[in-house]
Length: 515
Image (cartoon, rainbow, N blue to C red):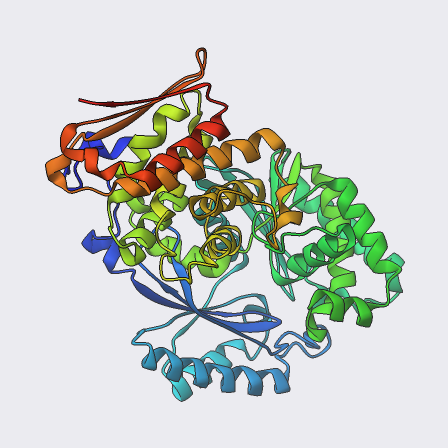
């Protein structure tokens, strides 16, 4: 394995040198964002100068600022009181967390209400928070940038639903293209005279106008917003889907149709309790479902992905240097975790080179998961030994890691589980294993056992190039080569772990050479 202090650029491989120690990245180490929407007011504090930073603090207050605006043209008075109280609290919290100044934006309700600008002045006078009222196209752009935080280089249509509006934006290879806003937020049309038929006509007419502006959008559809997330939760409940992670959850047109029908026929209060949806949000879900039905029918996307990232993450993305934007969010986040929590930061890079020969046919997607597993292999060492394997799996499958499909989360979780445990049977996660096929489970097991063995070979710079693995599939031979200086590291526990790896590979021969 290579030395820990080798800092040459080529040594970092295709993912490049980590950037979180760069001064431009460190400036983003704690960023506070406030989103004042038509339905809710939320504070998010991002922590960690990585490409996929952690949510240091996240609080939402359902204020309903846009409720009743269709009749009055003004913000809901009760909502204003709730919002002002929430913002006073958020400002004090931010001061306590040494986050200053907060970046605050207001969307549809504030920009359309006749008293919106006056309320902004009232907020600034009471809290010191400067609120920026953004127009619909800017809201669409920021939401699209939030999606790019999690899916760099993606192509598709970002659809952000709020209480009073629906914004659409196209993304193409990392750039935001055409965008448009519309009044298709549930608070805006739910009380339309004429009931469901009138709503359907209104939605269809507005959607046709959106389609004329946006053109054909046949790539992925990214759904952003609390009402969409509530529908996804209900879809999970309907399907009995075992991994309750909304980000990167996938649906198709048939699933949407079935879930909309399921909502129409359900006892909404019972469904709300079962799915963990708030009362205020559940009230809007049937109307958001009507919009989603027409949205899917109009644009016919190839698939539909939920995004937990939206306008708040877009504001963070706005502050990132381009060099950081271009990085893989998964790899940068895992590097940050290793630097912060591993016992020997930097060993993951050695481990990655060590295990690579076991996967000679691995493509780019597989290699990045191998890299992520190597970086995370030791970050859970503080957990009790009896629970480390399960803690690793839980962290990988449920952590806030960008750029991970659900199946990739399971692969990563299984690899890290096998880092501490030979067998995966008998855990509380077995229902999740079926989200990936058996060959993929086997690859995760091989990777995990390679990490388990490689972790036995911690060594200092004096044993540079002290150990290497080789796998010959044709002869089914697993070979370990070590120099004499490193030979004492190969004790009986290491030997048992190498043999366990050989069994998982289906090796017929195991060769150990000391040179």
